Structure formats: C-alpha cells, structure tokens
Amino acid sequence: AGCFRDCEIRLLAGIIRGSFATCWCFGRSCRVRVKDFSELTLPSDAALAFGFMRSLSPDDQARSVQSMVAKADLCDEVPEGLAACFERIRSLFALGLLCYEAFTGAEDLTWLMFE
Image (cartoon, rainbow, N blue to C red; front, side, top):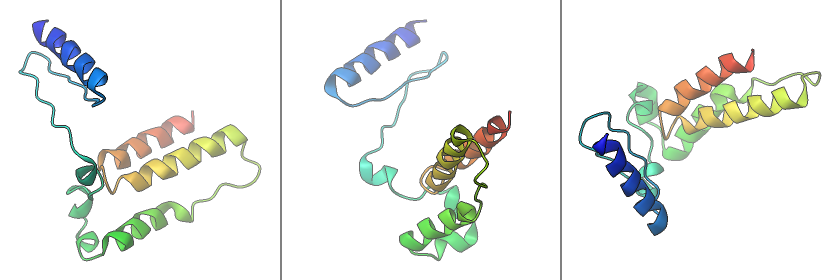
C-alpha cells in the first residue's frame, strides 16, 4: 500500500512539474523510465524484429507500415461512427512502428469494433 501512495505522490509531483509519468508497482520498488521525445520517435526494437524493416530508411519504414493497412478501405454504406473507429485503429497500427504494443492494441480494438 505504501508503494502505491509513493506513486501517487510522484505522479502528482510530475503533473505539477509538467512531466507526466505513471507508476504501477504491485509491491515492487517503483521504477518508471520516462523517455524523451527523440527516444519516443525511434522505431521500437520489437517492430524492427521483422528483418526487412532494418534495411529500410526511417521514411521507408513509416511508408511500409502504413501501406500494410492503406488498401483496407470501407465501403460508403458503413456508418460514420464505425468508419471513424476504423480510422483510429488504422492510425494506431501505424504507430506500432514506434511502439510495438500499438500493433497489438490495434488488433484488440479491431475485434471490439465488430461487437
């Protein structure tokens, strides 16, 4: 319980200073590594694990990931709300290059979109 309280205090202090960082510790010591902007804009190692991606320039990597979902278009009869959800998922998938978890998040949201 003390660890969660410490996290709340650190999070609050971070918000006041303008640097947002969350902390989930579950009984361990709290360790959060806050990345700077340049680190956040680098392709993730997990995304680059697909061998062909390493040989591409950053611009070509971005184009390659986006082209994977670019041709998947919805027909005009799809309701506007569903189409907006689809576009959010497509955008999230593209962010998977920078944060691999976005790939899996996009997949999870795709299944929810059908419900």
